[in-house]
Image 1 (tube, rainbow, N blue to C red):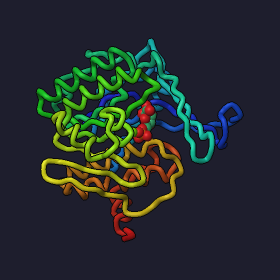
Image 2 (image 1 turned 180 degrees about the vertical axis):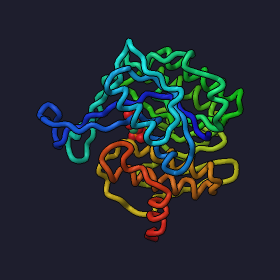
Image 3 (image 1 turned 180 degrees about the horizontal axis):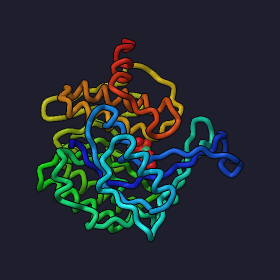
Image 4 (image 1 turned 60 degrees about the horizontal axis):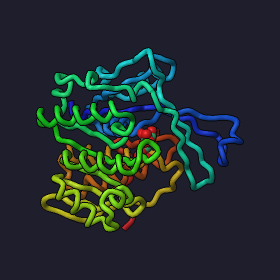
Length: 312
Ligand code: CKP
Ligand code: MG
């Protein structure tokens, strides 16, 4: 198998109407979580993945497990537990162009993960570990478990790929900065957003942010610049790539995870860094054209089609 990840996946409920949620009457549910968003994106691009997690042994836990399994992800390391519920969140469109997220995940089943969820023999089946800054923010035990997993993965020579995914609703600025910098120093490939880079290094330019991350020991950095594409820097190359065409955004959440899937798949398939980042931009853009965090994740054919309609 190729890519392993660890994290929390939830059911997200979104009001069917635009406007403050206090006036909403009906909601649509979807399944979302940064790590499985990326793993699902990878499966659509023919990369084999596995997921370590905990869910409540409740209706929503079973719903998530079936969904994730149905998308092709190996769920041998996912446990259903009795004493805590599956986390949920609400995604509100306050205005057409303003999305707000509200979590109900404190004390959730995933937040109770410990080192006992980590099985060395299972990790040894993979070549890459993909982690985000959300998992260590869930609880002290999740933080410990994340670092434990990274250290075993490194012993087993897996490459570590890291998306900081800063979530200040989950922890304080100081704890976030300290932990995310520590994770960067253990990673081979780092995929920050420009505002995350600014938060971590107090630098506004993508070049300086990438330089700082390289100095922390990573070999490849891709800084996401939203609709402007992304800036990449590795041992041999530095430059910019953008999506092949402009798209209309329906739901921005999940773009970063789609970006990660496009990049990691390109990297594993041996594309040049420029091509891999372009594929990442296209995958990230396509996710935002559909409501839900994973429903718009593209197949290889869809990415190819987007590339071929390139407007120059
Ligand atoms: O950075 P993104 O918008 O790609 O991340 C979105 C995901 O895991 C979303 O699915 C949500 O469940 C979360 O990030 C989160 O915990 O905030
Ligand atoms: Mg993100």
